[in-house]
Length: 69
Image (cartoon, rainbow, N blue to C red; front, side, top):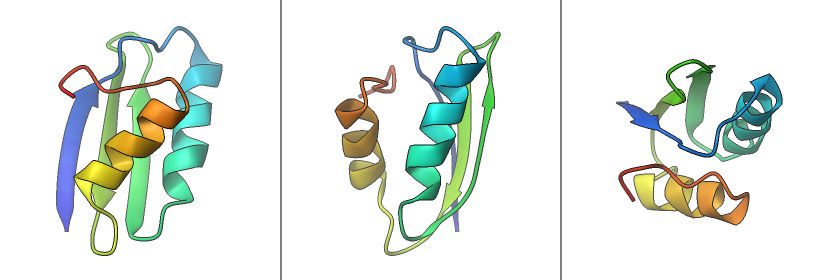
């Protein structure tokens, strides 16, 4: 299992965090997603078949790209 924490500069409200959680939890292999609004940080745990590349692609598709991509 891979764990990753990353910032998403576009997060502006709790609804943003909820949208990110909903989209990422739909990806096969994603185990947990949580977010912290004040720090604009998302924590995710995933395993195959999920990959960091498809997680980033999903985030870009919904206009919440991670800061390090």
